[in-house]
Amino acid sequence: MEIFHLSAECYPMAKVGGLADVVGALPKYQTNAGHQVRVVVPCYDTKFRKENEFECVHWGNVKLGNFDFPFSVLKETSDKLGYELYLIEIKELFDRPNVYGYDDDIERFLSFQIASLDWILARGEVPAIINCHDHHTGVVPFLIKYAYKYASLQNVKTVITIHNGLYQGWFGFDKLYYLPEFDLRHVGFLEWNNSINSLAVGVKCAHAVTTVSPSYLNEINYAANGLESLFNSVRNKSNGILNGIDIEVWDPSKDKMLEYHYSIENFELGKQKNKEKLCEQFDLDPDKPLFSFIGRLFEEKGGDLLPQASALSLSENFENINILILGSGNSEIESQLTQLRNDYKGNYNVFIGYNEELAHLIYAGSDYILMPSRVEPCGLNQMYAMRYGTVPIVRRTGGLRDTVIDFGDEGNGICHDQASVGDICYSINRAVKLYDDKISFNTVLKRGMTADHSWERVCQEYIEIYNLIIEKNEI
Ligand code: ADP
Image 1: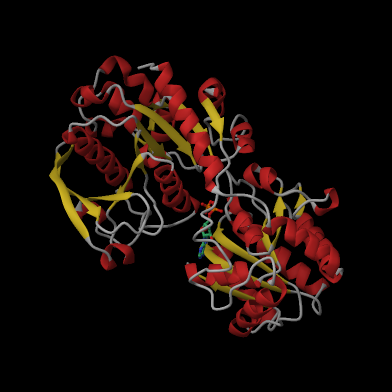
Image 2 (image 1 turned 180 degrees about the vertical axis):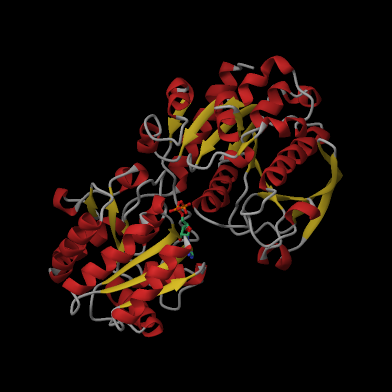
């Protein structure tokens, strides 16, 4: 079947977080399974855009109310990604280095959605499925159903996949005129709490809703930044599908970003070499267990708990542990974490910023990965970490609950229940004891390394949902 994925992010073209990894991997496995898969993302000014060849396959003008933006559709010309990648180039709106964070983000992503549909319409072929991802593409299911100009796409079935329900793409009804003309009897689908809520629109209008883990599907019924009752009301068309990981990109035996490769056969030596390199780079002691964190430094990730939890754990265990943090986000958290460097020199370090290569080295060279998240729709870090023989320490929430089991229950990691400094420190203490018992530690680590998180199984679950909504054939 012909499947389109519309998304704000796709690795390696543009990545901020897990959304990019999923949209960069799932289509590859769907293509391998025999489907025609096309991924459409905005054309940002990224390294990938600059270093790769594209051909223009369509151009037009996207109308956003009174504004008119010329746009082109650029197709990536090599076959190296394993799926067809198309970029929507709207120079005024996307020729910038960052994916998000601009005052005109609403205009940017609405234009992206309208231009994508204009192009899909102009092709003349009607795809079977459009899989939208997060709020940046949430208006698409509405437009397909009710905008007059897309009437010939009405048979397309739409899915919205929720990678993060906290962000919803709100805008006021004063911007309603941005949308192509639609049947006004359906204006109610746009509304949530007196504004237009892009995510809610997608959830209401798509034929199916998926979340990126089963536990997250349950959690959004009582914690979804105001959309709880909506998620409750669409349970009959919702499914939680745990993400996979791209085991071709994330493979310690041939990871292009690593100098020292290893597998389950020789992980002790391989990890030790990566750890020595990492510790040398960050002035840490490779003979002590290394606890790392990689991610966005926000409350949702428990980032606000990290400074105090690190300080307390380091004071208690000063002779025993190292902590290394890679991330960026809230400036207050960033400065607290940077401050700690002075107090715990030789045992603690932090890299503020985004660095893909360093992330790979951290997964390979650490003993533990910390994930004290308050909210974690799926979480990929714990799966990458496990594949690289790094034991996850997680708060039981969302996808972390679905993938990590405490070693006390013969599992693959260390778990706690509260998003609190106390719980993190308690888990770190348990981890130090476990690390000292090499046989038990290696048993836990190997359980993680051998777990199957591949996309093949997951890809099939998506296809089953697509087939189901095609068979039902509801408008
Ligand atoms: P998110 O909520 O941010 O999407 P996920 O766990 O789903 O969280 O995915 C995070 C992805 O982003 C992983 O691939 C992780 O390695 C990567 N990542 C996050 N922050 C950084 C950073 N500062 N540098 C490099 N990679 C990062």
